[in-house]
Image 1 (tube, rainbow, N blue to C red):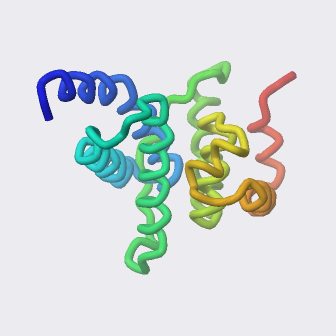
Image 2 (image 1 turned 30 degrees about the vertical axis):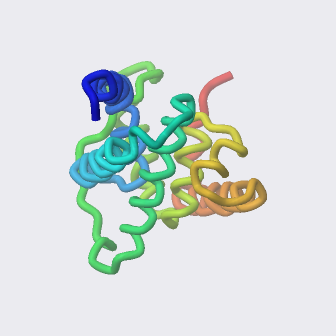
Length: 171
C-alpha cells in the first residue's frame, strides 16, 4: 500500500478498534479471543484495503468478517469451554456495582445462547443495527435475522428469567 492508503487505514483502525473489540467480546465472551477476532478482522481488512472502493461500507465489511470468525470458531468442539474474563464498560447504569452486575448477568446469558443467535442479538441490540444492516453483516435474509432474533431472545429469556427485566432500560 502507498503511504496515503496506510495513513487512511491507520486512521480507520484507531477510530474503530475499541468498538470492534467490544463487539467481538460480546459475541464470544472472552477478552483474549475477542482480541484475536478483532485483530483477524483488521488484518483481513488491511489485506483487502485497496480493493474496497466503498469506504462507507468499511464498518459492515469488518463486522461481517468478525461475525463469521466468531461463529465459525464457536462450531469447533475445543472452543465449547469458555473462560471468564473481565467485563466491558458499557455505562448508563446508576452505580458501578449495578453496572458490573448487569454486565455479568448479560454476558453470562449471552454465553448460553447459540452463536448465530448471539451474533444477531449483539448486532441488533448492542451495536444498534437495524434488521437490514444485521442481515447484510451476517450475509443472510432479513427473515432469518427476525427469526434468529426471536429465537435468541427466547433463549436469553429462558436463561435469564426474571433477571432480564432488570436489564431493560427504564422509561
